[in-house]
Amino acid sequence: MTVRALSKTNHAAFRSLVLFCAVLAASLAHAEEVTDLAGRTVTIERPAETIVVGDGRILSAIALLDRKDPLHRVKALLSDLRLTDGDLLSTLSTHFERMKTLPIYAGKGDSVSAETIISLAPDAAVFGLQDHGPGASNTELIAQLEEAGTTVVFIDFRQHPMENTVPSIALLGKLLGRQKEAREYTDFYEAHRERIAKRVAGFTGERPTVFLHAHPGRFDCCVGMANGMLGPFVTLAGGRNISAAVTPAVVGRHTLEFVLAEDPDVWIGTASGSIEDFEAGRPIVVLGTRSSDEIAHASLQAALEADGLEALSAVQAGRAHAIWHNFYNSPLNIYALESFAKWLHPDLFADLDPDETLKEIHRRFLGYPLNGLYSVSLADD
Image 1 (tube, one colour):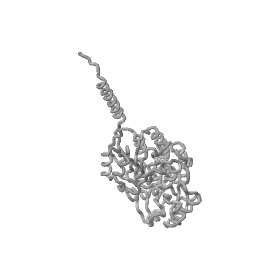
Image 2 (cartoon, one colour):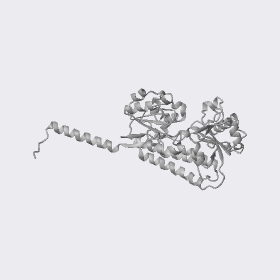
Image 3 (cartoon, one colour):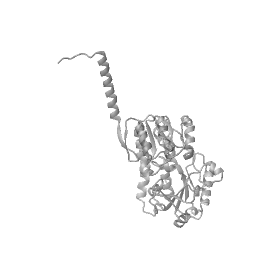
């Protein structure tokens, strides 16, 4: 056999081939097939360095993983965070300069063009199943983005957060190369959820009936969270959801007469009002970063009166409460679950402290402090 020395040209070509094969092998070694929350098979070839986000509220999930700087990968938001969660926008703007200049494309669903997104050249696009950004039904947009080389993944904290919060965080962890951080949070989340589930499973007493009223004071009475959003949290917390009992839908639309006739043991409203609403005299419950005990109680009382709910036994007995509305689309929804459990079974969960849980989440997993008030009870007034 004759062995010939490589020429300089051939040697350089050989080295280039070896380097190419090494890079290709490394890429293939990292590539992972996953199933997103829309049931789509997606290949993640490497951690995404740049992303666009559909609903801006997804930033709270990213912040759990990219704790030092949750915005450094984000090229743009594809919905108006000023309208959906002004509190989050204000908080991120205070602590991260990037938020002040981050492009926000106002609109909803398919109002943002594929061309606009492609021009940003993101590695990935993170969308919710059905929220204020492009959804899973925007098949043409999805196809155009994938053809341009953008990985598209769907997560869900809104439609079915009971089932989808943990897998959504895990999927984001894989997409961003933050698997360790994702496991840390999901371990914490599941431990807190399991504690409630175990106690309720062993409870043999009467389970209270509950009406979980979305946006009290904002719309005509009454929209109930039923078999989606925070509705199933009522069941896990040991209650009987009267809206879920009469409709299979995510939300139920009920008359005031229905709610009064059912006369639930516990009434819970979701607070979607702002300080501006309160100052303008609109009867919408106000919680969040800018609320206070005085504003929260006054706005809760105003919403109950405006919707004609003062005669409910729950209101008369002081078992009327409100929770910050945006927990219905947030990985921090464990606070809502713990609050429900304590309101429905105060003796069974006497040692439970939802406020301390929320403080611990901010202390351990988020790069910004907790401010504001996120729940209120009529009996505390």
